[in-house]
Image (cartoon, rainbow, N blue to C red):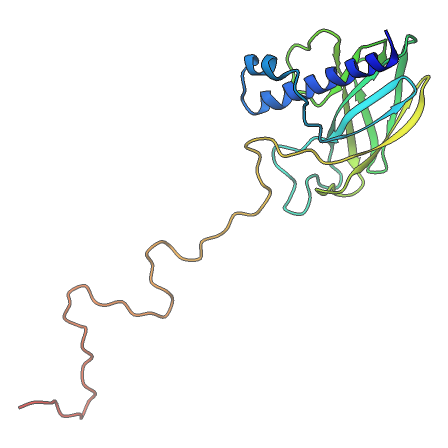
Length: 221
């Protein structure tokens, strides 16, 4: 198998998994996933290639509820990464370390070894993984500053054989139904209430004409 063909298969596998996750979040059925698996999936994250190691769609997972209107994640908190990593070479490699200036520590969960054509995937929704896919987690902990939308996070990955590379991971898109992170608008007046300082007409209809001032003669005979 040529290198070009292997690369196409790798991209198709990562794209299919990303598409499946997107459709699952939007409530689409499994039949639609099969129907559209051959179409180009939109990839929001960053990617690179380091020797035989291919990294695709690396991004910071958008939380169900952001920390505040100004920040997606608060300082001191934790954030998960979404990604796909595959080894196209015939020699087994291994993800040995992940660091970021945005976090005091980075935790890697699961089996980070990389045999040929086994896809490490993080940021999924759980459930049974398809053949050739190994769920893995990468979590930034002790964030050194708030993570804000639109500002990519540097992620440095070190592999046992391939070496070290840095990827700028953008913030992912908000999931369907996620809170927008904006404070709720407070209604200053109850519905139907009169503005402050205004006078309401009496309900009995008899007090609409002001009484004459003392000492003022009444009009008419």
